[in-house]
Length: 391
Ligand SMILES: [Zn+2]
Image 1 (cartoon, rainbow, N blue to C red):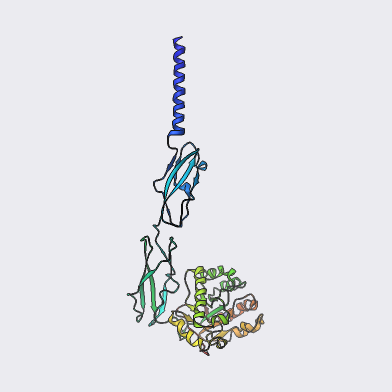
Image 2 (cartoon, rainbow, N blue to C red):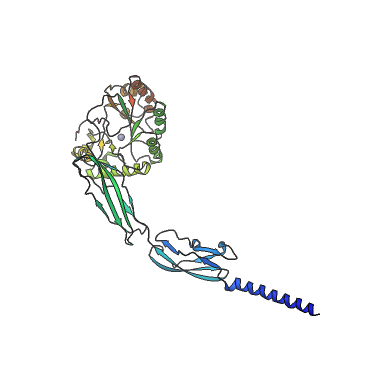
């Protein structure tokens, strides 16, 4: 009898203990645990569940959060409320700014000797606070009267005191290009107006002959812009030919020209990481069409591009593929192989309408190859054919 009673008491005690433990776990003990760091960067991505370190007796999917108080665009402390198994948990989330501003456009810059480089051109500073950040330039170390490599320091600070200091390499060079031809027999094939439907075909032909070339690109056919990077990676040179290639636009004023040039420069930079300093004027530097839009503009532009660290290239060989669309292949080959200077820079075009240029290319390459020429892309020492300014 006594034994039976003891068993009963024992059972009741165990049941009560289990019940107590259950109530403690369910209603007393904290079930949602938070991490120590309850901060989020201003204008960053706020993920409320990322602050939870542990969910007892359940799954994080059962946790909901009410965070409409929080203003991610403004520094401060905000209360947000989590709900888990019918219980609310408050947490104070702090919107902070610990991220430094970032400089964009501090690519290496080549400038001609005795010119004043525009150290602000193409430079931007951005910050996660989205505020407009002013920056300082320390250019004391540059001596533009002497060739050499210099370092310029850019610094910026956001309103939370996060500071960035960045260095930029500035190369003061004698002048890009050479007025003299080299002794080496070199053909510089140049393709204007691309990228286009034909760029890939041109590159395939060049690859077949292990020939390098230069592409003076525009912003008119941007679905092929990936080919700018492909061409660069294949060892070809990328040059700038203006963004719009619209004579009326680019030659309406000096300012309009540089706006357009900067635009194509940034476009190319998005593909290859820097702004090339080789340019070709639409119509060449000797064009007369620009007279119609701005008297004397070519005289100014040809000087100013050099002062800004660019060099411009005309040509001493011409496939004459600009004389019309679908010009006969044999005519292109004949005209494209006329020049036998040591350094030949041949004008060709890279657009959908210039299929016959693609067809003529192998014969033009073979002609010069048989005469011992190699095929290179433009570099800083390349002969610079310039035809003379007529406006
Ligand atoms: Zn052109």
